[in-house]
Length: 109
Ligand code: SF4
Ligand code: SF4
Image 1 (cartoon, rainbow, N blue to C red):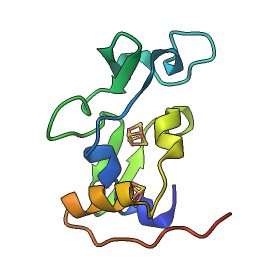
Image 2 (image 1 turned 90 degrees about the vertical axis):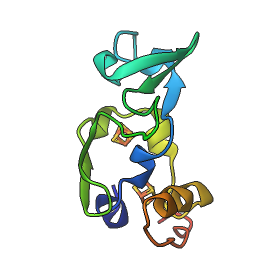
Image 3 (image 1 turned 45 degrees about the vertical axis):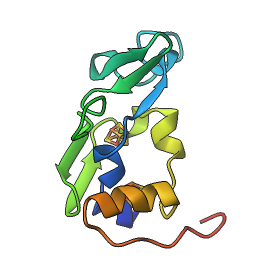
């Protein structure tokens, strides 16, 4: 988690964080603790707390915009791992929490 993300967490408290159900750890090769997810389609689950509005992932610790952490960082889903700082989606989540936009990370950073 980048230093910007450690003082943000907006994306974990804005979107429905969903992914293929087999990423939960009650399936072979899955990593996300199954008790932290909820079915949202026949083939997808979401992190609990992100299936509703206002969204806040059950694994998010701390205060958005101040100091945050992910309690399942090493087990988080592909959706979480692929979400990039400085993208329009990132800055949209930040704006929703009253946080200023960030520049996109340089390639390979
Ligand atoms: S919204 Fe952007 S800056 Fe904030 S935690 Fe997510 S990726 Fe990091
Ligand atoms: S699992 Fe962690 S990284 Fe993913 S949305 Fe929840 S708090 Fe954020």
